[in-house]
Every structure is written in C-alpha cells, then in structure tokens.
Length: 280
Image (cartoon, rainbow, N blue to C red):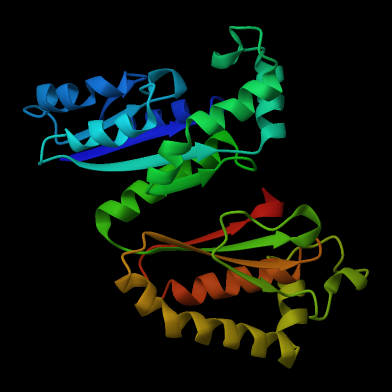
C-alpha cells in the first residue's frame, strides 16, 4: 500500500497537494491527528491501496519522538512517504495578509511573523523525516500542482523525470535546481536591436546563437556531462532531476539552450520537461 503524508507550514500549499493526490486516485484525509494514522490505514486498507493524509502543526504529538513511534506502529503493508512543503517567511506573511486568514498559532495573540517561525521549529521532526521537500515560494497554484504530480508519477513509474529550466540570474537561481549552468558569457542577442524584443524560441534568435561555435560547444559539453552521469543518478533511485540554465534576463540565451537540450534528450528519455521560468 502507498501512504503519502503531506505536511508543511500553514500557507505553503498542503491543500493544493492533497487535491492533486485525490485526482490521482488516492483516498485522502485532511488534517487528521497523527496518532490516528495507524488505525485509519487499517480501516481503509480493504478498499484502497493508495492513501494520502495531510497533517499540520495542530495534529502533531506533544513530544517529537512520538511522531517516529507512531510511524513505527503502521501496519507492515503500508509504505509511507513524507512530503514536506514550505516557502520563505516573507512569502507566507504575504499570503496570510492577502487571504486575511488567521495563522493556527496566532490564536494566543502571537504575532504572525513569530507564529510562522515557531511553526517551523515545531515541524522540525517532520522536516528531518521528509522524503520529498518542495519549496513553493516561486510557484503558482498550477505550478505546485504540476510539481506534486510529477514527483508522485516519477516515484510510481520509477523513471527519472528530467526538467530543463531556463531562468534569469537577475531574478534569482531556481531553488529546486540540481545543476546550474551559467550562459552569461555567450554572445547576447539582447544587444542586437532586431533581436532584443524576441526570445530564444524565435527563429531569428535561434539562428543567431546557432551561428556561434562557442554556443554549440557549450551545448555539447552540457549534453555530454549529463549523459555521462544520468545512468548513475537513475541507479540511485532518484525520481526527478532539474537542470537549470541561466543568462542575465532569462529571455534569449538560456531559453535557447534549455529548449535545445530538452529536445535532444526527448529522443532518448521518456520523461523530459522543458520550462522557461521568465516566460511564464
């Protein structure tokens, strides 16, 4: 039996993740006390082979060690995976301010910023037990749903999901990146007046970059590097791999490289995604 436990700080997207799992056919239970988890698994095991539950700081036992003990009481046929969702403090503050929701730890007049910090400390036992961690700071609802879906399906199919992602360094490095390549030294179409308003997906920009041998050499070296080490990563039972390629603004060079590499890898790998962060 598959058992997925969704946890994380309030406002990080647990409800979105649980809805994705429900769409994937999981029996879902929201915010159950952790000490009831073994009984829940036993009671629904006859009718379901996939269960997902969400827990938050209000559902945890008072002593953190009890969390490990409760997971140890699960029946032997249950195979638990813990997904932990989180994002930075300022983003959480903004989300609570926009929705005007009350933080669960603010009931005793605790200021929002202190409640957010305290919640992370209380969830430390879950963080250390997590099998998958998702940073939702830069993710929209749809991007978070897709991220959860990819991780679930990647684990189920035992096939590595490879994502080639373009980005602009001036907007920050993607936090989910496993490998980061810097393309800022390559010829920049931004300084060509007719190419500046275009992106790396437009043919004139593609022709411009393809005409430079240094660009083709960089693509070849990234491709060779990844092809060399991908078999080792796959044998390590990874479910997903993100290769981020950045230029200054994330419009031309990084887009062209990520798109080109992604298309080449689709010829040999079944699960390849291409994402252009600054284009979304």
